[in-house]
Amino acid sequence: MNFEPTSMVIAIISFLILYWALNKWAFGPLFNVMEKRRQLIIEQMNSVDSSRKQAEESMAEQKAALEQARKEAYGIIEQARTTSVKQADEIVQSAKSEATRLKDDALKDIVSEKNKAIAALRTEVGGISVKIASKIIEQQVDEKSQEQLVDKYLKEVGSK
Image 1: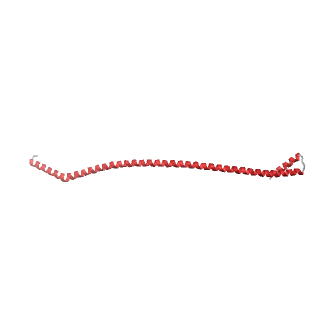
Image 2: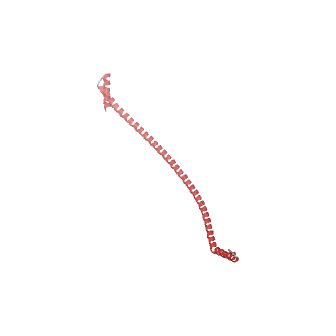
Image 3: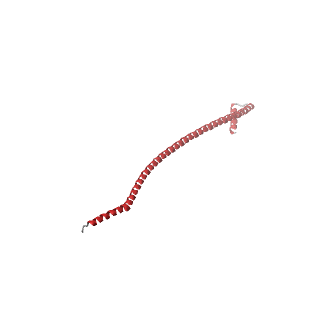
């Protein structure tokens, strides 16, 4: 192999022309595409970071809203319990007062019926006493026959 300086100069000039042509038509657009791709990746990374931050904020808001809803639900449940206990107490109290009223009415009815029975018994005993007295007056009896007469009339009254 021979070393020729002209071929070396031609090779260098060819290389420089090729480098300039590649730089102008190949490397420039290629570097531009790579730069755009780099910018797109940076934008996507920034977008992912902002999306992650928004998601974290949304999650925190949802947790707060959920906690608030739980508190409200517990409040409603407690209010319902309080109301139901109050209503139950009112119903029990009403039932007790009604039972007391019915008991008092029954006692009044019992006393009234007792008084009526006593009055009827007195009337009947009075009538029987009058009959016994009239029988005794009609017949003069000794003590033994008087007892028999009273027993007889008491049996008659008992059978009625």
